[in-house]
Amino acid sequence: MSDTEREKITIKNITEPKSISRLMQLFLSGMLFILGAVLSVLLVMNTRSLIILVIEPHDISSSEILGSIVTWFLYFEFLALIAKYYQSGLHFPLRYFIYIGVTAIIRLIILYHDDPVHTLIFSISILVLLLALYLANTKLLKRE
Image (cartoon, rainbow, N blue to C red):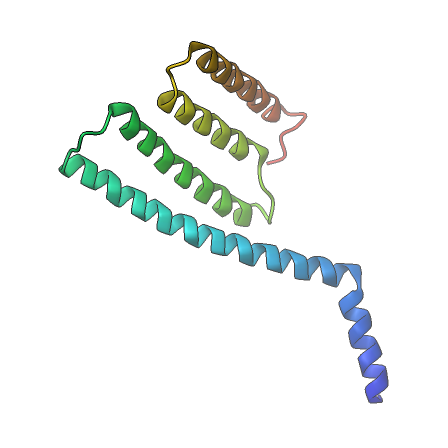
């Protein structure tokens, strides 16, 4: 086989849709792994700051401490989502995004509960997300 024929075969294999899809999936998986590493570092840093808050209390309000704890759970949930992505064959389950959304809105309620209208809107948002979670877990939409 000549060099020209080898080049044609190689270029044909690379430009094949399956190969491009695999390359993109490999790239996305690598970027997601890096994001997981960054989130892991942030989780460790947040854990350290929470421990310092418990050992050496500062003039911080309880809502800020609760906000920091909920932020810790958000890091944890994103890492769980990334782990589930790899476990479920490179697929993000919808319900994990809903869990993260509910946790984020709870954090907003804890930190910004001064305005009753905003608190009501946040609460309604949680209700809508819980309804979406219920629908996502029905047999019609559940995949796993």
